[in-house]
Image (cartoon, helix red, strand yellow):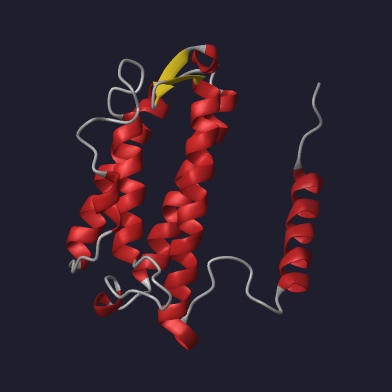
Length: 184
């Protein structure tokens, strides 16, 4: 059974797609641009997200999630990158996570993994990782929106369109209910 794992996997995929949709709107010249106040560039955020996911989920069940080969501090350094480099790094980080989550079933969630010498149940490790990824993807979206400005295409319900969205959703739910067959 994979009900819980599938839900977690879907959330990871939602945040991955959200980050990709935000990055797609940013001009190439702004991918490495640092915001005021010593903030992280999109490139730094991508390097950090990818570095974290790659470290945590490579040999997920058999090795400490903080790999000796990871240089976390370097993830935040200024870097000039092309879009291709940025997206390759992004994909390389998400790949081990998605492979490991796809291999799990709900019975695996009570097993133990280790992160920075701390034993955690797999469900705890996934919740912690998902929250971390969501936090930084939120930063990616915010910074992308800042760089894109008035050309930004909303990634959720645009401001001023909530009532129309809710009405459309209610109408589609009513239409589904009218056509759904009763359970026997």
